[in-house]
Image 1 (cartoon, rainbow, N blue to C red):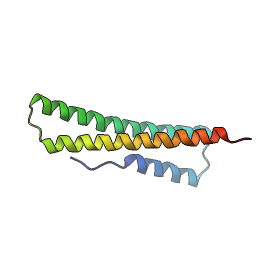
Image 2 (image 1 turned 180 degrees about the vertical axis):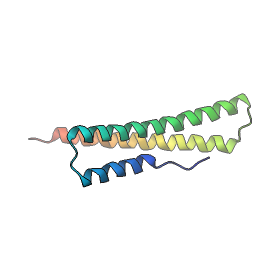
Image 3 (image 1 turned 135 degrees about the vertical axis):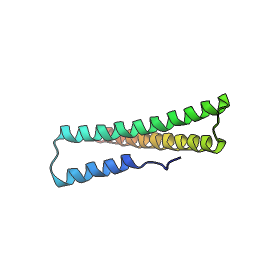
Image 4 (image 1 turned 90 degrees about the horizontal axis):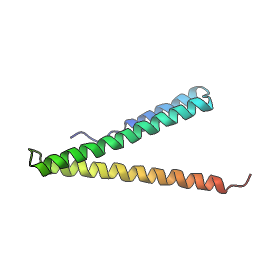
Length: 102
């Protein structure tokens, strides 16, 4: 089993550094943010699918070690919880901005 990937964080850091070096248009910033978000969601989905595959193999009686299934399940759980917390913070920030008067 491989460790938890931080490629989305590294990619986001790259986007931030890129924005500091030159001026991005709003369209480029939106596109960069969308690509980071999409990549992050794909990584969460991959961990969920890997966990489901290992669980299915275990249930069918195939040669899978129990600890590998449990580790994959916990990885999927942690990534999903982190994603939900990020979503909650984004929604909270949006609601706070909507409450601001102009």
